[in-house]
Amino acid sequence: MAASTSRTSPGNHKVLLAALLCIAAFFPGSSASTPLVAQTCGRTSNQRLCVSLLESSNRSRSATTVRDLAIIAVRGARRSVLRARLRAWDLSHGARRETTTPAAGRLVARCAALYRDCLHAAAHALARVTHMPAYDDGGRVAADDAVAALRVFPEKCQRLFDAQEIVSPLEQVNRDTEDKLRVASEIVHLLRRSRLEPPSPSRHGDVERTNV
Image (cartoon, rainbow, N blue to C red; front, top):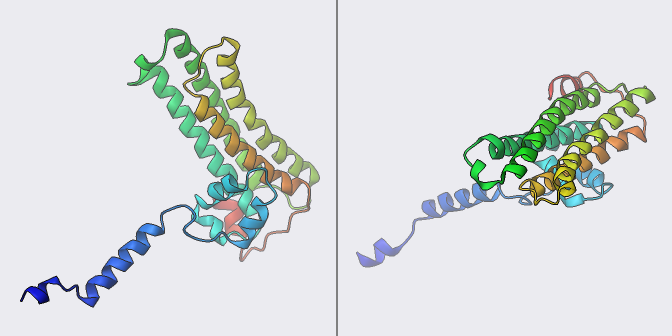
């Protein structure tokens, strides 16, 4: 009887293995990047961050053009801007307000306003990338410039504190946000340097119009 109770049935082994595989699937790096993601990220200044940013969306697996990846990257960077905005708002108005000095609190409030403006600008930039004409050099340049300009906002936030020699409670947030915006900008810039493929209605039409 004792021997029989110490054994694990084959069915239990299968259940345990399936559970471990499901858990592993959620860890970064648990699956290989698609060739398009790997090739595109290899042309950016931070390949690891680029892969992480793109693979944060399941849509990167079905992307077939750099343009698809550019849209995914800008969306991901915009989510980072939203998190920075919420963090700044929390520090200036929320439960952690006591963790900042009055002077730092005023600067954090200004950063919250900057990130609010950045969110609006990011939505505009995303629209430009999503609806970028395939054979319009001016449209590609405008989209590239719109995304590149987003990096100014976290830079301005950090400079507010540096100018007054105050340690910024948003320093890491600013850095992370700027890094993701830089990667997104570099991917969009690849489109500026090469003519876009005209999207096929059967394969790309829905992606270009609705995947926001």
